[in-house]
Length: 168
Image (cartoon, rainbow, N blue to C red; front, side):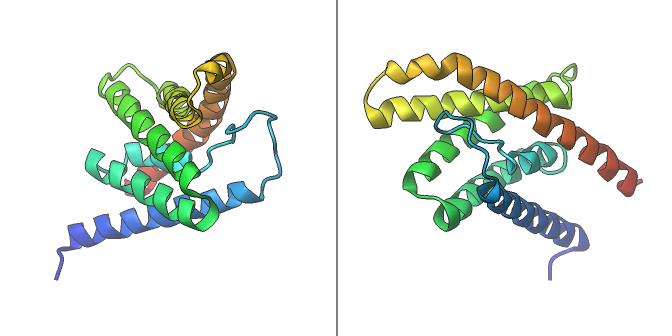
């Protein structure tokens, strides 16, 4: 029988995974088109930002990969899985590095995550469509990553503040 601490970790992981899948589903219901392929709000990344401050690095990668695979099979396709995996892995890596530097805020970390998520997806697009001409999307993807990262960061910061109050 797992210890109480291990049970809490498993329950937290399950809750974060379920929430990320719910947010992935909610995002499919939002009829917002930014006019550029691949740009979306990234609501499920809110759970990654929260997880950055609540679970271990290993658990965060596992959470992100599990969410990408499950939501990809449920709501997407193999291409969406490839794009999301690349974006998720690179953005988590960048956010973890920035988090270790104490002077970075949740907002800054989330914005960097948004930008690097988009850049990783652009690299995958270059490989899949076998052209470098998609590189012209970089300015738009950087701005989109900054804006969506800011929004996710604001919400993530507020959730983290409230979680800390609950733990006290």
